[in-house]
Amino acid sequence: MRKETINILIQSKGRMASDVEKVFKKNKLKIVKQNERSLVGSVKGHPNVKILFMNTSEICEALAKNVGDIGISGKDLWKESEPSIQSKISLAKEYSFGESSLIVAVDRFWLDCVNSGDLEDISYEFYQKKKRLMRVATKFKNLTREWFASKGITQYEVITSKGATEGTIAAGISDMCTDLTSSGETLRQNNLKIIDTILKSSACLFYSKKSLKKKGVKRFIKLLSSKD
Amino acid sequence: MKLKNISNILKSSGFKNIELDSIIESNQVLKRSGGNFRQYLFSFYDQHYKEWALNPDLSLASVKKYIESKTNKKTKWSYSGEAYRKQDKSNKSPIVKQTGFEIFGSYNKAKDDNEIIQTSLKIFKKSNFKNGELNMSNMEIFHVLVDKLSLPLRWKEKIKRHFSRKEYFEELLKKLSDDKDINPKIVKADKKLAERLRKSNLEKIYSGRSLKDILDRFDLKNYKDVRDQSNKRDIKIIREYLKISCPIEKAPEVLCNFFYKHNMNVFISPNYFPIQKNNIKNVKVLFTSNINRTVEYYTGMNFNLMVDIKKKKNTLLSGGRFDKLIGNLASKNIPAVGAALNSDIL
Image (cartoon, rainbow over all chains, first blue to last red; front, side, top):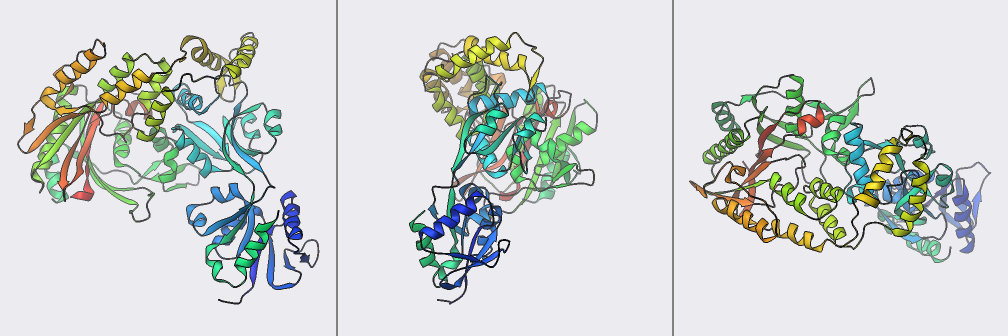
């Protein structure tokens, strides 16, 4: 066993960051930061543990590259990551915070569309009547493609969105979208309705498979998995 | 067998060898194969933000070249080269060697279908394989069968569309065994909204679709073309059809009996099949309904020529008629037929 620093990757800001801090507290671990804006911290009483504050979307990739040993990120981001990343990390615990669903949403005035079968017909309608593919805005192109493939829908085009995905429909950039939602309120306010759920997600504890060889990693995984 | 020998056979059969571009507009690939195919493309953008891809399939490149040639005349082309496709399995090379031959502007279907098959047989004869099996089918027969079923029209279209996606096709059959495909609670609320919307401007666009299109499909699904019962009988008939395999000489009789048994007034003439002999030298000729389930653009006759390698059947050649592909990619409807060689086993 090698005796090295254990790097734990957690979110730098936002609601999930405070929930993660609570997980540490419940397990009697106190995160110490030099100042509010510092992106590196430590855990009181554990000199070999370093906390690296990152953007949640970067945590899975950083674990796969062995920048970190343990990390907390969303299940959605893990499932969306490339297979080369997914194969290098494992899920240790699903927490009960950071819950959201990746859903498929269409205009609420598309009265004829209530399920994936309808959407498949409609994608052909676009192709036949408008001579173009149906456009789907999403931040989750891999999960979206998987869902479309599983439902036999092929006549579509993914429009990559960086934010405010629901707004791309009103702006005429896309015809429908897949997006994360927790209450569904933003969707309703944008005249959208949900026709299916691709994935139910929450915050999860991940670890790099390679890091299991490091001394203390297993113990910390166990500690952070016990209470949330 | 060397590629040079194949190109000589193709040349002597009147197929002109053409050079194909290495890249193609991504949009054209997606138009043919759908958005899901994007994951297999090696694509990139030019300085004008136009997206291009390394050619993932040479038959598509030859169709594109024919469209660009702006002719409607009968044209016989052959090609050989490399296509580039990302693979699901890491041990498979992204470089796919392809050799194919096609007849564009193929208005004499029977003659041209026969020519493609005869050329395939010539290639087989020059190969090192001693015995072969030629399986033939015809998409038109499957479409006739589906049209004769008691399914709602939109379901018939679905079943035809997804013949080439075996897994999803199975899922569709499973869905057909359910009693209904609409939720009465949702429909009740939507019917009220539909009545309100009928009074507004039908040309109004909602997320890319006109209100008229939305209401037309809504009415079709809920009033005119309702599936309110299980279609177990239809599923059984489809499955029975997909099991049919017989010597080609018997195919018209077997198929006529099949349709008669299910009270369908359909006559299948021998003209559906370009070859009507059970044996051509060392090649056994069969009608097999369940072949080429991965190619989405076949519209009529299609075939594969199988050979044994280490007691396992492998495809040496496969092909068929694709009368709608050119129309889907350009504004002109030009029938075509062609075949491609599995270069991997040569």
